[in-house]
Image (cartoon, rainbow, N blue to C red; front, side, top):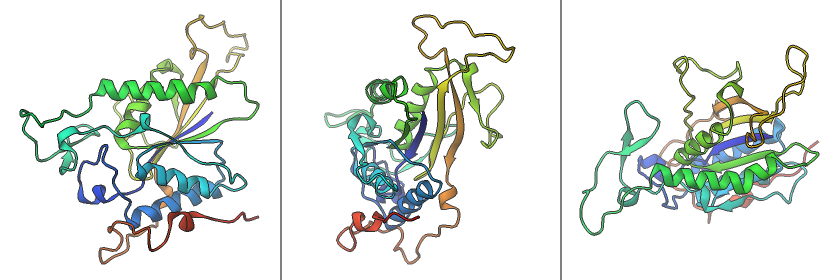
Amino acid sequence: MKLFLIRHAETEHNVKQACAGATDSGLTNHGVIQIQRLAQYFRDRPVQFTRVFSSDLQRARLTATGLCQQQLGNRSLAPMQTPLLQEQHFGSLEGTRWKPRASTSRNTPSKAEPVTGPSYMEEESEDSMRARATSFLRDYILPLLLGNSPEEEVVAVVAHGIILRVLWKCIADLFDPADIFISPDVDTSGIPPGSPLTPVWSNTGFMELDMRPKPLITASGTLSQPAPPMATFSRWQMVILSVNSRSHLLDLRRTGGGIGSATHDQRQRTLDGFFRTTDSP
């Protein structure tokens, strides 16, 4: 299986540096162009998705829809939406400005809300997000990975920065660390030796994973031993092919005069019309 973990395109909350979380933030004009670039990149590579899953929040849903509409030869492809892939709920901090937290990929609001009071709501816990990510893997990804389809599954998961990080950790936990490999094309200069990979995602950045059973014949030429009954993934390996890939955005410039950062007005041009393409030779 090829698995692409993709973050949604730029939103009005991203531009304002505000916590969106469960807030259904709208795309910017620049974000719409990011989706078109990403979709064209996969179309021209070509990457033909067999399944596309997305959060049901519009910023992820519209990003996933753009990918599907640029796929050549598969007009019936549409994103399967699930609330399991929603971003972390920031509770009472929804909509407040954030700033980078030191030595981590997470973001923290710069204006803290009071921690007491009847209206205060805590942010969603790591355990809650992990439970959602585990349910998504169990219900949607593992049946495809462990199924008997004669064709390789090529799956896109379009979601949000924090929940993607949690989902990645849940995926990595399925494998023996010795069976997780990083492609030489991935820049690992910032990762201390022996430290786990903690990826981050820019808008429309994607992580590409290749998961498949290990060869039956070992390097020494002998048959490998059967796996223990409960060790489902002890016979599998995973290769990390890219982390936060943004090659589709290399020459993209934001439209000036505040136009690029403005919220996209769907009345001017529908997203369906923007992304729709025709098959080309």
